Image 1 (cartoon, rainbow, N blue to C red):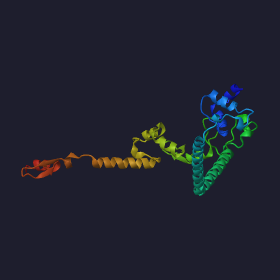
Image 2: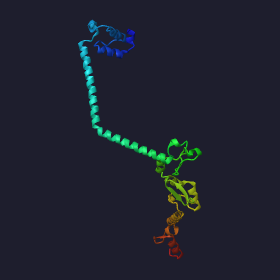
Image 3: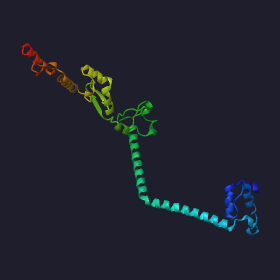
Image 4: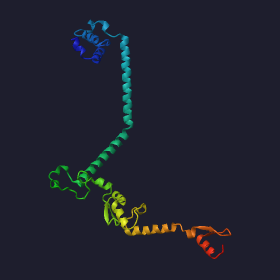
Length: 255
């Protein structure tokens, strides 16, 4: 029977002994023997040495009282914080519910645009190799139309035409900006005799490109160094003159 008590464990034996007001120290076997000694006996028949002294009881009672007070204090603080933060909790819950509702509506819109109910795929037009795509959305990596929100996010509903590329149409601003550095646009600029530099970024019209190219060439001509006008010489009197004036004075023998 003592072996049965021993299998209960130290903690449970300690709790049982404390409940009876008995000493709870010692090894596992000592505790089991102490508890087994109470079997089929009244408190009056038990050995008084098995019980704790009044001082020990008071000490343990004080510890339990302090522990219960600490727990009660923490519970009071928690209830107080719950009361103080009740408005914030309610507002947070409402905000989360609104976001979940909007997310649900967006998912329903995506399903409507991207091909309807998934459960009808087996009986839909995909059996014949066709994909339901009424809005002509671009296809993703899985061969299915991309979500409508992603389509709008990348501006794929906008089309840009480039006359320099042979009136080729680009879908979305990202593809349009990227094409200025690609071979098609570079070939078109080369055919016009214009270098494909940063000056011609975002220019898609042939007329605008030629007009800007002529303007740049004129500016380069104006900025080019002209020795006959800008090269300086000094005459016999110390006057500074340009090359053309110096040559005229020398021909006339005035130097």
